[in-house]
Image (tube, rainbow, N blue to C red):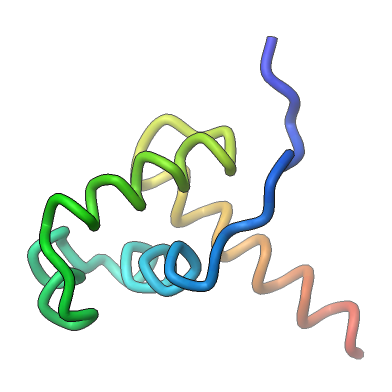
Length: 76
């Protein structure tokens, strides 16, 4: 059984990829906006899924929104 919290923080680049993924960007769009190859994007997405304990882009986007909401609520 996987743990429900994150064992490793996202790298800065993974966070950039996750932000774009959560906005609905495709791997191609992400690669073009970050000036990296699609293969590199796929590797980042794979790493993100593992770190966030998710199975797909939708779950990753939901986790991204939760992380942003939780971070903002701490500063209220």
